[in-house]
Image 1 (cartoon, rainbow, N blue to C red):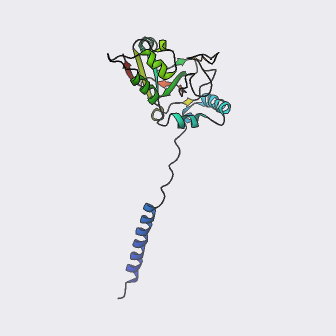
Image 2 (image 1 turned 60 degrees about the vertical axis):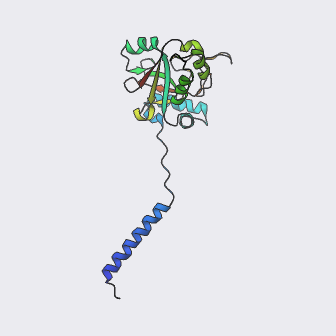
Image 3 (image 1 turned 120 degrees about the vertical axis):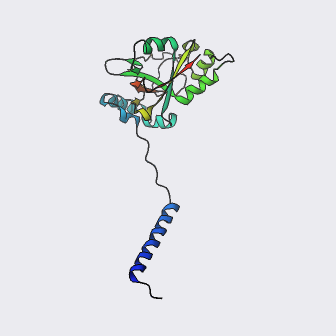
Length: 213
């Protein structure tokens, strides 16, 4: 049978397309690009601080710290309800944390760690046990007495500047003995061994707030 040359060219082209598609389906999937660094969301001042912190922590920097401990890019932190009312509600604060004329600085931990500790500390009467919560987070129980507020923020979705905490950050209380709790040790972990990051200008409007009786 004689095949029209034009038809034959179209047929071969169609076959090559089918084979090509089949090869692509059966081939190795392309490696997805790594997630963007949270430091990309920082201004020049905070980028410089982050660079210095990473140099001190080398070869372990903020990107490795986030990938290891904050894979979902979500953080949480706790405040007593009285502090929340005083420093957030009554002042109409736009950002969480201790503020100076440069920015507002907030220590935050992995959301799963904080939420897990809160769940573990729940009591039969619907409240929480400060001692259990403090033990889970490696901090003094007195920090968690009375009603609390738990804040949760998606750092990636809100494009919030995040870096390793440093000695010069507002609110830092340095440890003086190995037994000290609720004090700062450089390296991305609390004195109780919980991963932490420094969040710059954590927006109140974009943060989920839950009441902890």
